[in-house]
Amino acid sequence: MSTELQPLIVIKRVKKARHAHHGGAWKIAYADFVTAMMAFFLLMWLISMTTEEQKVGLAEYFAPAALSPQTSGAGGMLYGTALDTSGNKTATPRDEARGSADTSGDKPSSPRDVARGSAEQKDRTRPTRPSDSDVSRPAVSEQANSSAAASLRQALQKMPDIAELSRNIVIEPTNEGVNVSIVDQDGRSMFREGSVDPYEHTRRVLEALAPAMRRLPNSLSIAGHTSATRPGSVRVSEPWSLTTGRALAVRAILAGAGVPNDNFTSVVGRADTEPVFADNPYIAPNRRVTITLLNAIPAAPPNPFR
Image 1: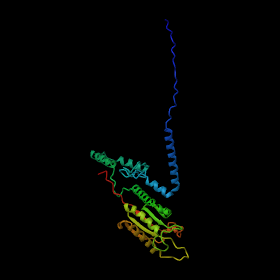
Image 2: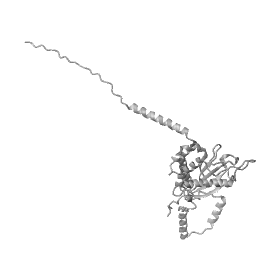
Image 3: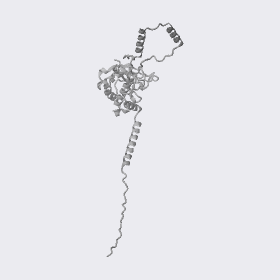
Image 4: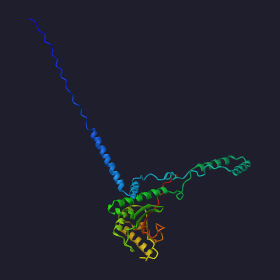
């Protein structure tokens, strides 16, 4: 009996693979891009809405307080003073002749003179001890004034309802300290005409500044000013009494808002003797009350030579 061989049938089935999943990384990148663009346009809008004075205040607020704005070396151990101020000097012919004449007749120096000369040379090369009166710290005062001005501007920025009074409040560092001036402008006055009574918005501005002035170590000096009377016009009130009364009114508001009485050093009236615009003493911005935060005397640093 014969056995028939059947052919082996191989069935090959090809499976079609699906495309790999691309993932959602592009969605995250796109969301980050949209968020960054939104933040950028929001920043541009905020910058366009802020005034120049507010920009300066923001820049001073974020400035590092530990850095000195001077590049002269002040703030270091010697406060910018040099070890030797003699420097290199060029000898004139007269000096050369004098030196040759002096050396020609010198006697041989003894060992004691040599030792004395070496000791004097060491004393000249040794750094001198700077006294408290010789050490000046302008960089410290300038940095303190900038920080104080930034604190005052920040206190005003917390009150958006007085934003329209930005032109009536001038904060500027000076050599004496920081001046905070409450200034009249055309169309908006800070005091009633011819009166020592301030308007309500003036009172709110002073009450907003009082907490920052209370925290600062500076003493306060207040001076009242007014504009000159145009020729031929009738003077509404006596300028000395008016400016003194307005300065006293400002002091009373600050004291009522918590500023200690010991912080005030002087309250004076200047009448129309110190106009801001000397070429036009009749305009409204000459009418102002200036509060000066006097420079605080910094504590003496520890002496490194002791």
